[in-house]
Image 1 (cartoon, rainbow, N blue to C red):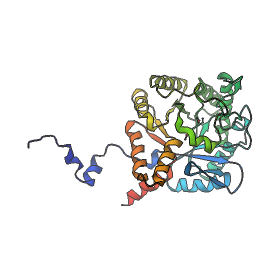
Image 2: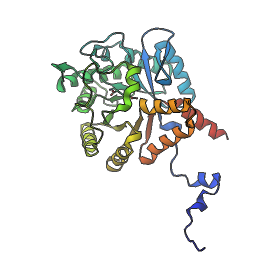
Image 3: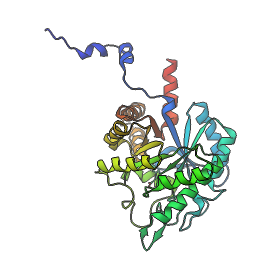
Image 4: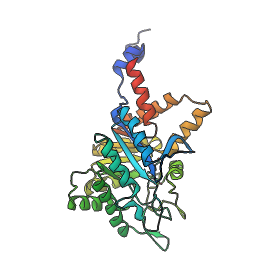
Length: 327
Ligand code: PBG
C-alpha cells in the first residue's frame, strides 16, 4: 500500500519516541504542599491521603531535608493552628504556626522557595474562608484580614504568597499592603480559577477546615463555568497577580489551556487532594499502575499549558524522574 503519511514511523522505538516527545515533567516544575501543626516529634498521616502528613515543626524541618535533597524547588505551606476563632486570628498571628514554619524553613534551607497559602478557613471555627455575619460571608471586611495574613507571612520570610479564599479584590488588597510595608518584591500567585469542587474533600480532613454550615459556593466558582474563570483571572491580573493557579487540575484541563492561551502568565495546576486520594486508593487495590497514572495525569497538565504543578505526588515524581535519569 502507498501511504505517504505514517505517523507510526516516529513511534517505532523508545529512542525515537524520546526524541520527538513534546512535553516533559521536570523536577523544577514541582511545588510540594505541606501541612504544619503545633507539638513535637509528630508526623500524623492523613487517613484519606496515604503518604501525606501533618508535621510538628521539628518533623517538618526533617521532612524538608528530603524535599531539598530531591531537588524540589518549592513548598506550599498550610497550617493547623493551636486554636480557632470566628475571625481566624491564627492566620495572621506573628508567631502563628505557618509564620514559624516559614522562619524555620528559610533558616535551614535559604535556597528553598517557600510559598504560603493565604486563607482563613483553617483558622476560623466556622471553617469558612471569610468572616461571617448572620450566615453571610462578608467580602470587604475579610480583605483586611487576608492582607494582614499575607503581610505576616512576608515578614516571616515567605518568598511568595498564594491567596486561596476567592473573595473579590483580595489580590489588590494584598498587593497594596505588601507594597506599603516594603514587600513589593514578594510575588502573588493567585488561586484565580478556583472552583467549588468535590475534589477538596481529603484536604479538609488534613487541614480540619470543612465548613461547619453551608458550603463554599458563594465564593468559589461554579464548576460548569469557563468564561467566568477567564473573568476571575483577568481581574486578578489587573490587581497585580504574578502567577495564576487553576484548581482543581484534572477535571479542568480546558481552563488550564484557556488561561495559558489567553494570558500567557505562568500557570500552576493544582493537582488537589481528591485527585491524589483516588490514585492512592486504586493503586492500593492493585487496580492501576500508580507511577504511570501519576506521570500521565501530570504531563496532561503540562500539555494543557501549565508551567508548574502543585502536587502531593511531588516526592514520588522527583524520585521517579531521578531514576529515569540514571537509566
Ligand atoms: C483553602 C484551600 C483549600 C485547598 C487549598 N487551599 C481548601 C478549600 O478551598 O476548601 C484545597 C487543596 C486540596 O484539596 O488539595 N481555602
